[in-house]
Image 1 (tube, helix red, strand yellow):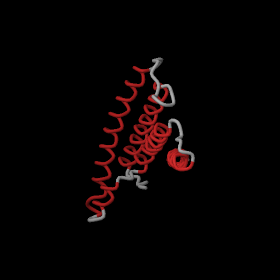
Image 2 (cartoon, helix red, strand yellow):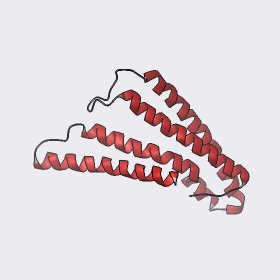
Image 3 (cartoon, one colour):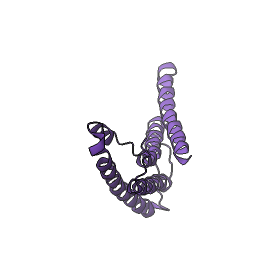
Image 4 (cartoon, rainbow, N blue to C red):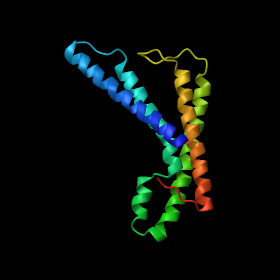
Length: 154
C-alpha cells in the first residue's frame, strides 16, 4: 500500500516536471515568453519523483544488476546477490540519510531559498532527508526479509 502511494506521488512528480517543460517550450514558441521558474520547478519535481521511488526500489529489491547476474545461475547466485544488494542498499541508504539529516538540521530556520521560486531551502532539504530515512527503513525491512528467507523481489 505504502509502496503504491509513493510510486503514485513519484509518477505525479515526474509528470509535473514533464508538463512544466512542455508548457515552457510551448510558451517560448507561441508567446515568445517563458514560464517563470520552469527550470527550477522541473528540477525539483523530477528530483522529488526520484527520491520517492528510492524506498520502493530498496524494499522490493529491484536491483537490475543482481537480477541479471542471478539469471546466469539462479540456484547459486540468487541468495548471495540478494543479500549483498540488500547490505549495500542499507549502507548507502544509511549514509545518505545521515548526511541529508545533518545538512537539513543545519539549515533549519535559515533564510536561504531557491533562486527562482524562493522556496525555503530548509523545508526542501527536510523533505529530501525524510525520503532518505524512508529508504533506510525500507532497506532495513528488506534485510529482515532476506535474513528470514522471504522473497518479495520486484
